[in-house]
Every structure is written in C-alpha cells, then in structure tokens.
Image (cartoon, rainbow, N blue to C red; front, side, top):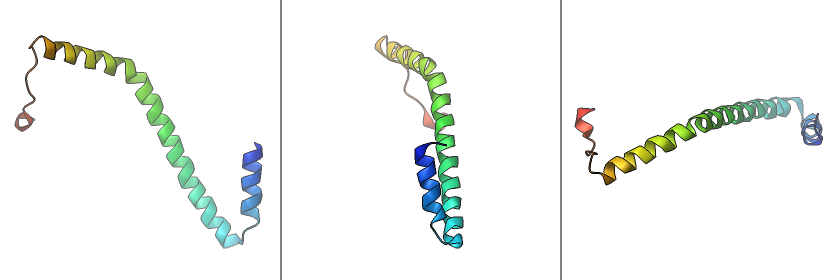
Length: 75
C-alpha cells in the first residue's frame, strides 16, 4: 500500500463508525468515477488517430468545395 493510501486509511479509522461508512461509500463513488474516466481516456486515445484523419479529410473536402452543409432535418 502506498504512503498516501496508508494515510487515508488512518484518517478514516479515526472517524466514528457511521462516518467511516459514509466516507468509504463516497470513496467507492470516486474510485468508480476515476476508473470510468480512465476507460474513456483509453478509448479516446485509441481512436485519436482515426479522428485526426477524418478531420483532415473533412477540411480537405471543404477546401475543394466537395463538402455540403449538414441537413439536420434529414437526420
């Protein structure tokens, strides 16, 4: 366990039991959020090159006059 985790554990242990439960529940939420953020970042990183390529192609099509405005009603 890292020093930071040990410090956090000691801090939680110093609290009354009912407060410990609330703190641990909030910690679970934070960990779940951080895990999801990491997954999102990994998925986005994996697609980054493809997105850049698509953006370049779109800009090139606009320069050449080959692009048409998006018709939102057609969606």
